[in-house]
Length: 271
Ligand code: DGY
Image (cartoon, rainbow, N blue to C red; front, side):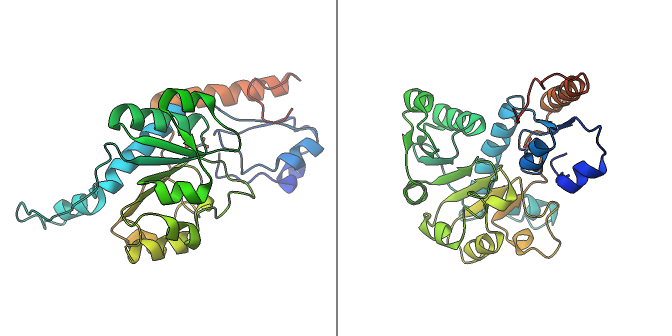
């Protein structure tokens, strides 16, 4: 599972027969690839099959955080709904606004496709290399991160967790965002500095955040983000559809079978 940290010590404790590690996830930041490579152990993941499921959750979080679903649902559940009020739970609209995709991989592309096609959003993105398909399909414009943060009405994070992306969004970056902006994270919790995010949300320096991932998972009982009304948190359910999880399970199983047969994993991340 993505929650299992698999380092060299774990690999060694598994014994010398260990041939393969099949992650039940597309992200594999929980596995020490160098340690695996060093020991001749294959590592596999489950790319592609959870793209749509995770993109749907990102879109859901954009709408839910931007339209105050969290406090609005709590209002009904606490029996506090008295009247229709002109200024109750005012949120943001997205039609024609700018969506910043941080990491235009498969999932980032799928979110851009949905929000450009459905809401006519202008797409800007960061990526190590230009993405010609995104540029031709939705006229996406590649920017440096600072410029993307300054221009975007919604910022959606889709980069893998690496040494370069850990705490990518901290106090300085949140300070560059628009006061009405919505931040969505369906990537990994560690990409965002949660203390800085709690400060920005409580001081209303950004409008809202929608998180499917946190640090740690589950989030600490005492984490301030849990009590910010403009922070909507889901328990890492990005890939939680029957279709995606069935396909992930098959891919992980096929990776293991291949490794046990001494073959290359069909979905290997180490070569
Ligand atoms: C993954 O597979 O990396 C996702 O985070 C699971 O939801």
